Length: 352
Picture (cartoon, rainbow, N blue to C red):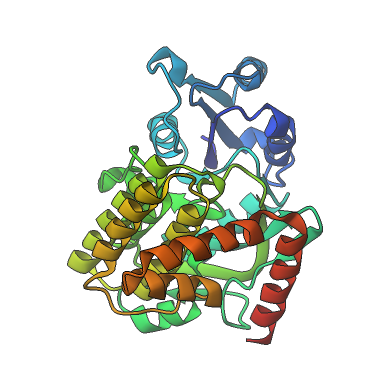
């Protein structure tokens, strides 16, 4: 019986494949104790060949090829993750993006903590890998090495120590029994699938253990994030997923609502900034965002320039918002300006 099942969805991941697999193979718990499930979401490069080779070479590696069932890539990791969950046999589940890496002792730390604390979910910290080196993230506002908490019974405390990166599926250890018993799956028709899965899982997690100072996951900043893609269709799908989770939280709990709402609205506006199109198209998109925000309280989005853009949208000053978004488009996509801006933001966060 494997100690943990690692689900790795991928699409055109050949440039990261070998390094990512090495990250799993070198885990301190022993590679033989890990079930690796590669799920190809209709890749067009050589990554499926690599996955098949590994599955034939190692008995603990599985290869699920979605191109046998689907004609094109789904565009989001929800579908391949769900296929991976069906194949998983271990008691615990880890999710993994093909362009990132885990610390060599990550699984050992996650598993030992899960057992020693009798927890239902382990949340580890992460660092962001950039062209200028590694940036350790201020993940949780505490000096403690470990925190156990029932999030639903201690919502204010959980929100106080939380960071939006809690919501991602990577860098965590989940119980397969909770996922299966409650029929939890990822949404497949759009982005925001991590948040949807995470908040539904929390309904059944009596104890969540947080490891604020254990940097177990290395996140690649330069992966093909949805925020960096310019697409009207993507923005509409993102907004649809955003609405769905807000409705779920309105019905079930207010846990991390402001945190989630602020971060995802900020991401939505970043996608808008990067969306190309005619003025009429952009006004149509701004109308949808404005309608969504109509009955929502104003909230700090964390970045002064995004707050300014959002205020213009809420006041229906769409032409000004479009003009400002063009300025931001240049600011965010120019590497020199981006580097200066990131350093200013990091300095600001470190002083908080």
